[in-house]
Image 1 (cartoon, rainbow, N blue to C red):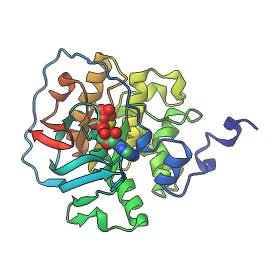
Image 2: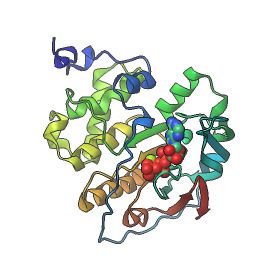
Image 3: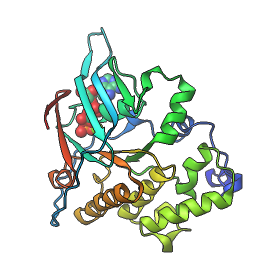
Image 4: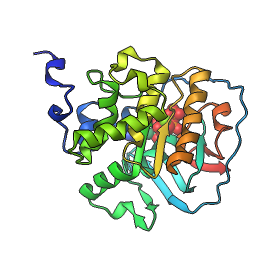
Length: 281
Ligand SMILES: Nc1ncnc2c1ncn2[C@@H]1O[C@H](COP(=O)(O)OP(=O)(O)OP(=O)(O)O)[C@@H](O)[C@H]1O
Ligand SMILES: [Mg+2]
């Protein structure tokens, strides 16, 4: 039996793993597998109007420190005393050299890694206090992830890829899943590509599918780790414009890691990390 025999494109037959974490493990997309490739600097021509960011705080880290290999000879201080607020409808760019702790901070904010010290607060909820099951549920409902390498399922159509998180969230009605995905496919401008498989799409189109997938549960916060790192400057600009649309249409906030100063300039606020510390804002 080939791998494709296992995966039906019929929505009712997709064997969804029990949790998003299980899915991530099955498909080898654990956050620590995110690539550490050299990043190309991209350029962008169009100036972007900045939005007001005086909304309420929706997510924060409070004095977060993260040590890897604690008390071992190879201990690494990935983050040190990092306090960061993300406001409602705000686009925050996180920048800094390779190894400065950007992905670690994203993973901690998303509840994928535990801080060694400090807390992560969403609304009035300290996510460090949640059980594993509650944490999975929190992630599925409150956070949308977008990665540099898209991580689409190659055997599923564009629309089925986008519907995956709805299956984790227990939306059993195929019709409901269809209407949710239709709306997002239109938002990302791919209505004429619904039945295409990922390999039939361009890199920029694949990233737009990944963004639509991240949005389908209407998360308050989109977390994106170098979502434009594999795109040319025009597609990188389209992705950032899409984040702007998402903020206006759904009221989501976006925390985006980028190495590209032109992309960072499109954000409302730029946070600089260096050696695990916020150095300026
Ligand atoms: N699982 C891990 N075990 C040990 N050390 C780790 C682990 N994950 C990250 N680190 C270390 O923590 C530091 C911060 O890593 P992180 O991946 O957050 O950097 P980054 O800013 O995202 O870098 P890049 O721009 O290259 O993606 C680095 O020194 C890295 O080697
Ligand atoms: Mg990283």
